[in-house]
Image 1 (cartoon, rainbow, N blue to C red):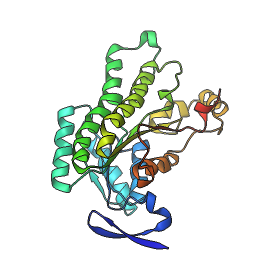
Image 2: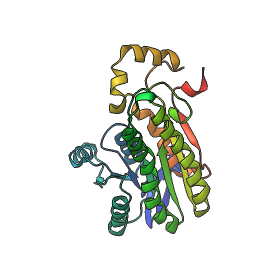
Image 3: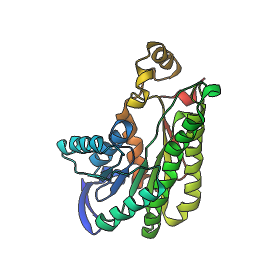
Image 4: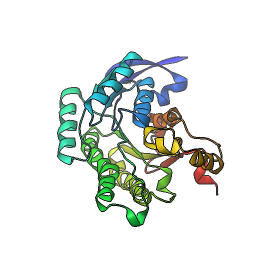
Length: 270
């Protein structure tokens, strides 16, 4: 059974059963989306009907990601900018909105990892981690939210981590950045929910991505992870898509400041 609904002045035919999760007529910006989790989420949002905007610093990787989506029948804008540069972010976002219209969904996915014993951790890398994992959420979130506030609605999804709640040896600064992302998500919701925005976070567990390649290829670590995780395995990036669509859609209209763990149960068990 289908229904016709209006999206930005355009009549769209949707299945009543999936209307709450339909993203037709919505535009979604995903930072760090030239590979890994970011690209998987962009693909999933496109499959749900959204018009996606890919972002990254490497224009060649961004072009290849866009071509891969085009080959699957999805159009994708390319918006290269350095998310750690506040001025560059504002210029790129304001320029895009001026030429193409509103950004309805933002996924703050840009991030990095660096592993080292805490007593030997380089101060420069500590600062780089915070710029990449936390400042990017603030920079892009603020630039996009200003337009969302003017429109009276918007969805922001920040990518946190199981390290938002847990810690393990060798990644204390990364753990600190993801804890900050979790609390910044709460702060964004506290400030912006009154303007019609929903701001939430997804906290992935251990997923097979380029960021985790060294761990995936380490038999000892993989064996430990399989025993530590109730689901008994690594996650596949496609398993994050459902959570993203939920938080990007009307289905989550009264969900705000929440961190949704998608981790195979690792944060639920000892």
